[in-house]
Length: 384
Image (cartoon, rainbow, N blue to C red):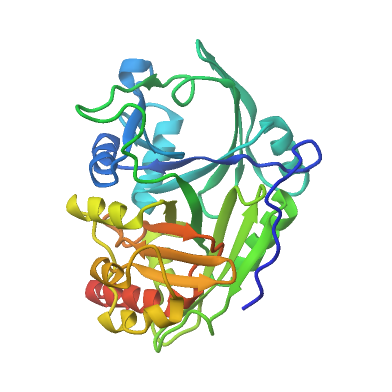
């Protein structure tokens, strides 16, 4: 595995050729946005903060915005396939199932970001355009990435509304804190995507050349493999660590890997999991499990030598064992992490819950245990 590179923690927006301010939203196409929003509100304790649909002048699509800390998901489904955009979304759900269509990135200047990206080889989808309402103006522009996924660059520096023009604020549920004081998560830590065999380095070079990302870590099939399957993955960071991405491809193995399974059931490349950062992983896991979220399980033997391998952690080893939370340490500190089972009907999209205590890594010491846990679930589905 390549060494972790030194990444600057600050950046000069005036001189950075591709400044990024963070993840603006993870946008999903779903079969039923109302029910998806209810799931994230109850199971992830997120707040519905905005809505767009027939009642707001958008007769073809219904969209719910759910938030926790700085995490924002946009869940959109078709009301009637009467427009081209609705037909495209319906086709996306038909081919891929519920999944991510857009990893939207907040930038100080969407026009400059788009022009820079296209000049360096990105395929433009939407040239810069403005949306305006009584709350102000947002500038948006989009480029294509792997599969049917895109990055939308969002400049909301002149906007004070709940999400975008066309959306109206949503009232909090009964007893739900309006100020977000009950939120479980603070931000999107990273997003991990799967691409076809031989395509990983193409997309790594894309992010480095087009968007100025820096490689953080590389994991080969020697790092992430079992008796049956393997994968290769590289981690990237951009915007002085404000946006982190993983790009993964399958490696040759005796049986089908989790990446092969994803590519088969998703119908191509796309976002496999979203990692949500929390300051209290034990509380988050207990709250999610109480509302039906299922997590991957870890053999009890994993915890027998954990204290010796990791050293002291904020959460005691016995509690980690009880919850099934993994731990790993590097030169900067440690992290605690756990992965859900797929949250949609297809074995595609899932979530990682991560608590960082100094570590900037991705839990290399846990990869074998994680991979074996995923394989056990694959075998239950008959897909290994």
